[in-house]
Image (tube, rainbow, N blue to C red; front, side, top):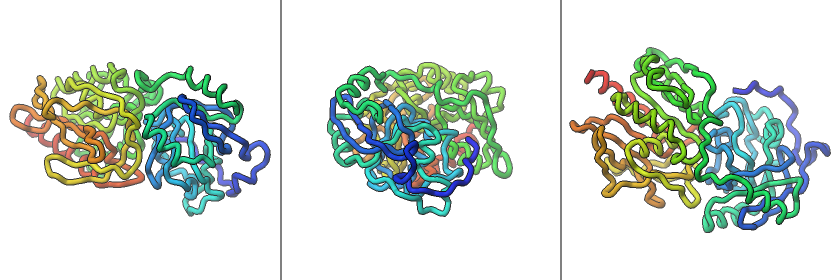
Length: 396
């Protein structure tokens, strides 16, 4: 985590001096749709994939989520910044979004937990934001046309010139971004209380809250780089393997899929979240596809097909697993099946793998049960992972 910034008096970002105050800014999508506004945070120019998030709260967790690497996030909530920024809620060591788009920026934060304002933190980390944008119109455009490349600039205010630069940017489809976000060195998050299990967590863009949720259940979590090997996992004495969330196209992440295949061959229990769900699908022989505009927010309804229970869940994904015929597929490790669906559009939201005796050997979900900003309907999944590891130990 980055060192806390020194406490400073909170100021109105619109009344700052000439070096930090707002200036005219323009946002241009790759299809030419243009929006104007004013800057907040850093001045300059940024490019990425334009996506929208429907969360009414939790913007600090969103901005520091590595899964948003190379994406420009549009907030559908109209008023952003009122809770400021603190040193406790970051989900990683930095802001990962390429840019931030809001309608109404709070003049001053009003939370007792805030140590500085949102514009101050974006400026400190060099992240370009634009406010005063009709985010309703922008979101409707992305829903109709799909997520697309975008540029935000305080320097190039001519839309046609900025669009030409947008069109030179790389697409998200085919992007392998794991190396950009994974930890360079292993580290350990100790179990809370007695250690019950040891888990190797492969960092594909892991969020801070995930190892904490595991540790709260008596799990010692060894967070490992994406380049780790099965031998290194075994050397840690792992009772199970976890694959985290992360950015990019799962179809381009061949090395993590190869590792996961070895994990399944070794009979180690598996749990995956988000990107870890997509890679689980690939290891099981299923395809993945890019969604038109994805799911991002903290209010997505998902049904557990085994119980019929509907969970309100947190999402951040632009790709999804393709369902097999009949939602079931035979693999060399057992039967893979779709365990969860999104009630909005039927997208696969979970997978499970059972052996010939119908024991659960691995499972994954597309959404985020750690959900630092909420909701917490799916937190039981961490307990399910403990149960799978306990069963595996008993069988051995």
